[in-house]
Image (tube, rainbow, N blue to C red; front, top):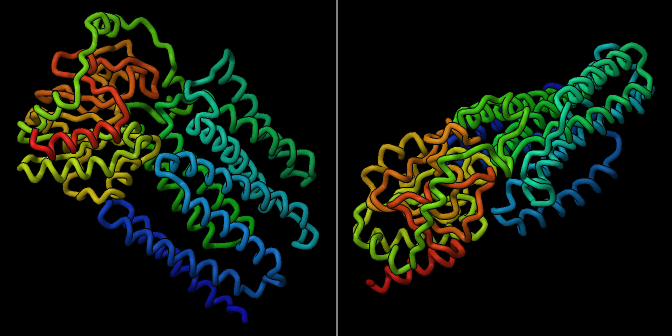
Length: 465
């Protein structure tokens, strides 16, 4: 059985519409599941329609790929922890980039069977190879940084930007060469240069910028898919690639704006170094020392509060403390205490990381507020409970012009009457700089694992202490 051209085009149109509805659904937590259902349905229709395309003459390798890939994907989906989701997303982006490169090279190898190359197809192969190769190695570096296999601090060297520029010019030259004679040498040279450029573009980007990098690589993977669609003359790949490319680019812009940084400053790297310049304010604050608090102390202030704002961060994700927070929220609401969760746009290691974790523990959407909405409420909060967040609460972003994060919008936690921070140690956050919040008079630190401390707070408050 094979589908006619018109039926196939209609199936692709329906799939594209479902993908658009899926993206629309993902814009809000309350509609995210419905959006996922739309996207899954669209993908099922697209895959089935493609398999019934009359141009397919053998299903052996296709079936083998579905079985092997489906098995691996299922195992990963069942075993992956939410804390590892950012690096998984980065790794999956690399697969898209690699696929684009392999399709381009495969098309060149099969040029006689597919028809002689022409200037248009050669240009498509060049673009697909460039974007795909940069996405592949860049995503692998991002995966390494997120997984801890590579240092999260930016790695830069003298002449780095000049080297990248020269490599870019050389790659364009190879593309023009390939476009003129279709030979293997410029194609392979262009691929090698793009693979190296992908590494060099990501290694100077510090850990604090990783949410933007993940979003940016998502955009790259979309453009790689679109380029592959042109090569294969598949309209659905072009549409879906463009959707992913544009949505990733827009999200990257939004994330950069939330960090008060330009997109180009992120690409050029340097944010998140382990060492910073002369920080006179940080030095003066450090001399004052840090107040440590016991769980019982925090429980006393929390139980006598009327409004509490919880600020989740990557430490909550690592400790898997979201379920303990849900239990804590329940006992507090039973006591008539208002509980609000404050979300910073770049909390965690990828866009929406905290929203996903809170939704996983069934914390109501109406209790979760974004930065712009919740910041005015901190001055009316009796207690701000910071669970594993660091850079996004650092007042240095507003008060210390020498800080690398100066100008970055933060959650204004320090305005609450009392601030309790659950943290394993005084080790700096992913940006590598000290948090001035910890040295303020209204702030105390509860040292320990986020999940254990939240459970201890729940036990203490449940017991009526």
